[in-house]
Image 1 (tube, rainbow, N blue to C red):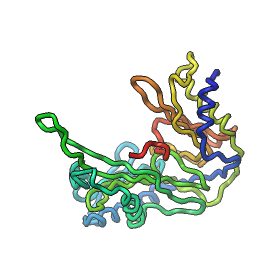
Image 2: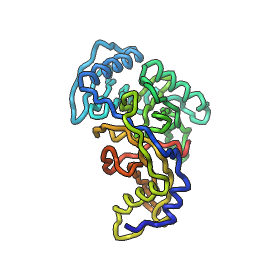
Image 3: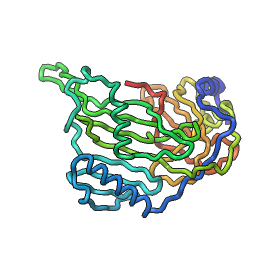
Image 4: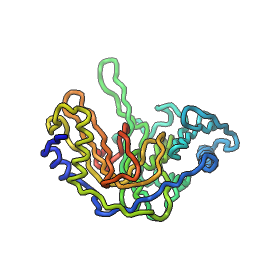
Length: 304
């Protein structure tokens, strides 16, 4: 399969986190009973944090998830295949907005506020060889237009803090490892955890392919989208290229944390979209990686 050398060279130039050898970890395969017990305990903490009755809850199963229903519309969703959890207070978007004027807010405080929520609710348990690092903030804003066409003040409705898990010093790409969405008065509107727990000690040390070979694999995967045309910098602009582990989408089972190359390429043109490509960073993968349909949150993305 022919790939464009200039596009490969651009990818290689922006590579990050390359390691010649990387430990490989087995993911703990936890049964539903253990996951539910842990999630119900977390749901009770979430309810108590909002002054709700933690004793009042019910559990329903829908599609591939279990939903813990709490008072006043609050809920916590568990995705058993991955162990991922997403909690929501159930407020409408404009309930408990942070400020009617987004320009008057000091945003430097929100990362610390989110960290306090993580600690207060015990959202994660860092095991051996891993830690959680703040990555970025999102601002959710809203504004109205007057009858004569003037834009009103821009209100700040929510702030989302996203953090990334690092395992053996390498980032675990995929969805945010932990996110906390804050409303007025530091109240938690929602949070999410994507943290496939691994055994403490690696079962192997993998020799990885270098950035040039990784970029080649990425572009070969990208090329399958248009096999009759060699894709060039005229069609795609590389935005991100990093070695790391990868957590598959929340409804996908996974058995190992193996080294991968993760690339994000933006399509040029009127309908520009970004394509996420994940390929094994070893000559022989420990587990197949099928095409990924979700984009990772990366520190390379523009901060607002």
